Image 1 (tube, helix red, strand yellow):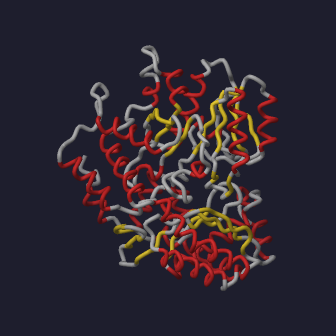
Image 2 (cartoon, one colour):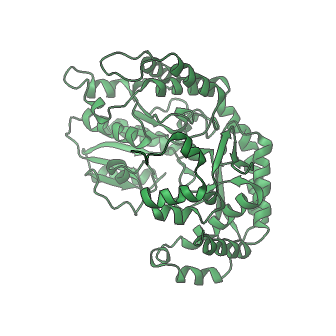
Image 3 (tube, helix red, strand yellow):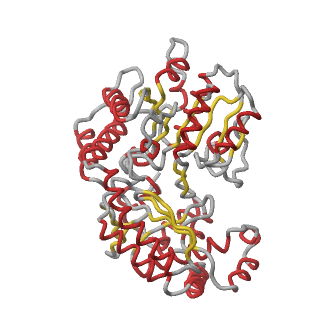
Length: 470
């Protein structure tokens, strides 16, 4: 066993050694892909707030928000202190035959903050698990007598077999749960048609009120119309706010900007764990949950989905994370960042009409459609490897990656693009980010675009070729 790597050894690994371990034990193609970017050839030494510190001392402004995980930023001091206190006092982590005061308190806090009778919680580990738990709950609520579930054509709900089937991505080609039918996102008539086509057989409808992967959202008329339709047909309405919860879009959850609108089940994860804990939740209306599981036969049925649900330190972290959201008014912080992002990005769209298409967002979550570029890119697309050449979005992805790479290398700013829909470049800062830093990010994007997409792509492709020698 002398070849085992210690924690101290980990901290001394070079980036080349890390790449080699990834190639041998994780995924060699992942190394090939990520070393196309500057951040794929560097290691992070530490992280705090909205900043990463690299091993060479460079400070990187992280405008990714951890892809929804880091509303609290990196290593929030209150969250670190809560976890350290739990460990120092040697609190019991998990034991299913003892009741947990932390799990009980977290359920209480969720019920206090959510509208209506959304008060019955279950706490698995990931967002995909929360979605699958919500779907199981809906199916059980109907006693297995209905067999159809409706999902939006652009939805993203995870990549497990069940949640992956509910995700509107054509590349998901695994077996999944039966009975999935599709409606057009935001189109109430499409939902009505789907319900009519499966009359009396729809047990659930799952939708993201704000689609973080495509940066579009359902308007109030659609959401209220779906709520009314589900009420009439006794369909369990599931709102997926795994990404957009805890203040990200300017309200605690996106749907809560509409008073009186209450889903039957809400799913949440990502920033629910404060950036330090892998925890999720589905929170159900009392009448739905109690009918499905609140009996002696089925009381423990839901817990069979995962052994490690509601672990002590994870619940402690979520309790503190929620209290920070409320006490520091994270929705207001998101609205403050929107006051910077909305006009700054709109200005860029006007200034660079040949490079910037649609700009949209809410709160601290915005997407910029980078598209266009010189004709030579059409040739590059045709000459790309077979799998890439068949991707109708390859050209847009290429120019977006070139912009992301230049932001990082020239301005020490970290962004990303979504893998779903039209692949917008995302500016989604943590809610602890200083508005001046967000303005700096927008200004830097303008400086990058001013170089021209042709130059940016040429540089990016040249670096990609060089990275194969890395």
